[in-house]
Each structure stands twice: as structure tokens, then as C-alpha cells.
Length: 478
Ligand SMILES: Nc1ncnc2c1ncn2[C@@H]1O[C@H](COP(=O)(O)OP(=O)(O)OP(=O)(O)O)[C@@H](O)[C@H]1O
Ligand SMILES: [Mg+2]
Image 1 (cartoon, rainbow, N blue to C red):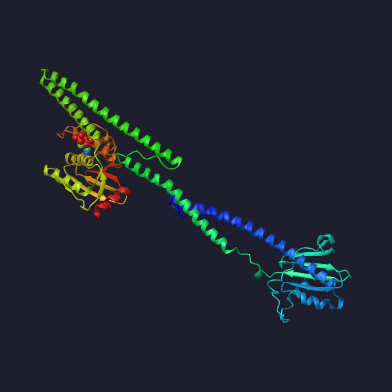
Image 2: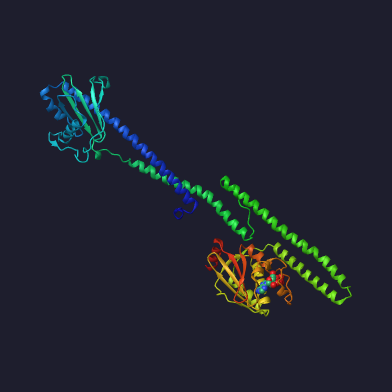
């Protein structure tokens, strides 16, 4: 069922409204048909009684021998009259006589006989259910008892009246199906069509009213997820949407405050550690024993480097870089070229096709630099590749080093974590590179995953692309 459901809010709303409309129209059509049939039957009964009363009065005033001839003239295409000597027989026998009478031709205006309107197979084939109803003289204005039967299957009535001289007048009235119009008038279809149009338009308006603010919200959430500055949403639309907007706005304020507090705290700690480290270093200079002094000074230098790195990170976090669209391929290529100029073994193996990407380029460059730096430092060389796909862009940095064992692959992202293997070398890092890189990539809505390369380490950076990113790319291509 799911794949057939319309996807957008407006098409669902329109579908639902039309379904409700179809249901209500169906019910009202059934009620309309039932009431119409009832009204038509009542009218037909009145008409039959009227015709019968005229015929009774005419027969009462006509001498017996002339009655059959007069009745032949009175017959109409839908009604037939005949005389009988006795009261009506059982309904099936009377029906047989009535059927024969209805199938008999009638005299037209010009005295020419016209064939019967009835088809014996279609209009008069089935027997009618029901019984003769006897009604007293007071039943109708001419004051004579009568017997009446509703001929449902023939769409008509049968009436038998005993005349004042004891003879019986019979009348049958029926209407062939093809003469009774049961389809709704054209006006009905016009009304239905205009209702469908009005309902669909109303549904579309309502959906637009809801969908537009929702679209703004989606875009804002997407941008907030990428760590961009997002303007406060205008709280508009229906109550529920308005509430969602204001909740989003409040969440955004809280998030921003939280990040700012965290960065400020990091900066404060880094700053406050500088003074005791400096004073310790001054005191350490007075230690006479050379070996101990050198060791303490080395540790203090390491501590200072850590503090400076933390401070640098905190200040870069605090300076809000503007998001803009850049070509990721050329960003990577120029970064690799810059590092190669420093004498590093860095190789950009991407195809160089244009990949427009909305990001904070300086921060992203920093993150990628950290990864390439690691590859060169611990893996001798770096091979950098970039692969765009519909949903994201993947940047892969590979090296020829020893790699990182599976159990350490998550741990190395923690700040100040350095693996034993790299501690004893002259590599000189503080263990913040991966933490910073991941923080930056996650702020763009992406992630970094480490895996075993062949050989060495394979670092995979995934950056998400959304509609806005694609639109940016399109704009750049044009
Ligand atoms: N490509 C790699 N191959 C092998 N080990 C790696 C690789 N990249 C990182 N590591 C290990 O992960 C540890 C953490 O790396 P990270 O970049 O966070 O810090 P660092 O390089 O030691 O110092 P910093 O980057 O702050 O100068 C490194 O010390 C190293 O042991
Ligand atoms: Mg590093």
C-alpha cells in the first residue's frame, strides 16, 4: 500500500479531501435515488387513481354494449382498460390478462393503431410480488370501493373497480424502464466538478500554509546540523507549526550558548595553565641535577605545547568562519601542493572534477591538513582521493605506515591521546590532531572513520550533501 501513497503533504491532503468528498457524494447519491424513487412512485399512484376515476365516471355513463369500444379509445400508450364480469382473480392470472392488454397496440390520435411500447421480454417478463389491497369508498373522491396492486417489477399499478351496475372495470398502468430517467441531471455533474475543484484548491492552500514553514524549518535544521549560523525562524502559520518553530528557535539559542560556554571554558583553562607552567619552568632551571632538570623541562615543554594547542583550537572555534561554497577538489589539490612544497610526500590522486561544497573552508582545510600530516608523520606518505556521490562526498587519506590496531581506532580521537609507537619518535605532536579534525568534520554534519588500508591506515572523511549543496554545485557549473 505504502508505495502508492502520495508523498507530499499537499497531494496527501488533496487525496484525503477527494476521498471524503467521494464518500459523502456516494452516500448522498444513494439517499437521493431512494427519495426520488419514492416520490416518483407516489406521483404515479396519484396519476393512476386520477385516470381510473375518470374512466369509472365515463363507464358509469356509458351503456354496456358500447363500453368496450369506448375503452379502446381511452387506452393510452402507458395505460390499458378492459371490462370483466367478475372480481379480479388471483394476481398471476390478472397479470397475464394485463400483460396481454399492454402488449396490444393502441389507437393513436389519427385513428391509426400504434404498436405497444412494451417489450414482453424486457419490461413484462417477471411476475410482480405483492397482493391486491382493498380500499373503501372513502379512499378517493368518487366514493366507490376499489382494489389496487403495486406492480413493482413493471414500474406501475393495477386498479379494479366495481361499477354501479355490477360490471368490473380493470386498469393497468406501467412505465417501461427505458422511459424512466434515473440518471442525475447535468447540473449534478457541474456541481460535483466545481466541488472537486474547490476542495482540491482549498486542500492545496492549507497544505501550502503548513508545508512552507515546514520547509523553512527543514532547511534551518539542516544548516544548524552543519554548524552554520542560522537566523531565527519567523514564527508563522497554524498554532502547531508556530510552536514547533519557537521550540526550534529556543533549541538553537541553547545549543549556541552551550557551544560558546564550552569553548570559553577551554580557552580559560588553557590560558590559566600558562602562568603556572611558566613559573614551574623558571624554578626548574634551578635544579642542579642535569638529568632530572632536562626531564622536567621536557615534560613542561610538552605541557606547554598541549596548552597552546588547546588555546589555538578554542580560539579558532570561537571565530565564526562564514560558510561559503568552494570546489572541494581544488581545495584538496592546493592543500596537497602546499604540503608537497614543504618536502612532504603527498599525492593527490583525485580526478580533479569540480565538486561544489558549502562549508567553512579554512576549518575544513585544517582538519584535512591534520589527517595528511598524520599520514606523512606516521605512514611516510599520503595518498589523497576524493569521491563525490549523490548523498555525500568522501575524502580518503591513505598511507604506507603501520596503521592503527582495531582496538585503538576509536581511542586516538580522544584529545591528547598518542599511541606508544609514536611517543618515542621525534614526531612531536600533542595528540590533538584527530580530535580537532573530527570536531570540525562533525560540525559539518559528517564523520571520520579509520580502517585498515593496504598497507597502512585508511582515513575516510564523509561529508553530507543536501539539496542546498547540490543547488550550489549547479550554480557553479552554470
Ligand atoms: N596515519 C597514522 N598511522 C599510524 N598511527 C596514526 C596515524 N594517525 C594517527 N596515528 C596515531 O594516533 C595518534 C593521535 O593522532 P593525533 O593526530 O590526534 O595526534 P598527534 O599526531 O600525535 O599530535 P598532533 O596531531 O596534535 O600534532 C598519534 O599519536 C598516532 O599514534
Ligand atoms: Mg596528528
